[in-house]
Image (cartoon, rainbow, N blue to C red):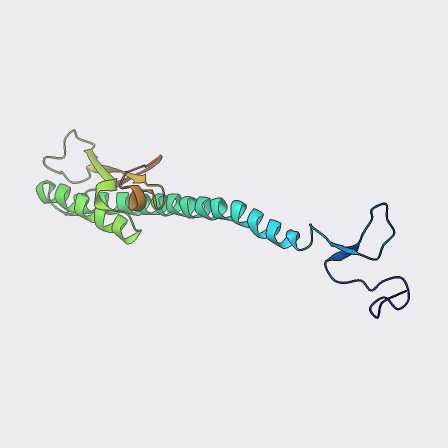
Length: 168
């Protein structure tokens, strides 16, 4: 005899439940074990794939910032050395390069500045002499230094610039 929920003899379908498929033809229901698991699988897979992808995007953006900052810092260092006398020019070049890279979010210890002049050393700058600067920036992995205290810098970006010493 059909129950009140099974009036037509077919049985009412309940969400998440399927009709028993065993050897006995009874009207009992069993819970579908796969019900709702697609959402959980999607969220789990999304987290597993998205977190490394976001981390990679942050690192690539830091490499790009280092490239832009290194070019700007090299130009600043060459201009500072060519515009000022040789003694103050080297100190000013290093300070300017570090300040420029600080604007791009890099620490002063991650910067190396090398200066060279066309007539040998940069002891005394003569008019029309060419000052060359080379800036190297170490790009650290995001969050590694903050979390572990180690300095992991797998990428070093360098840029060069030159500036002619003015006649006057």
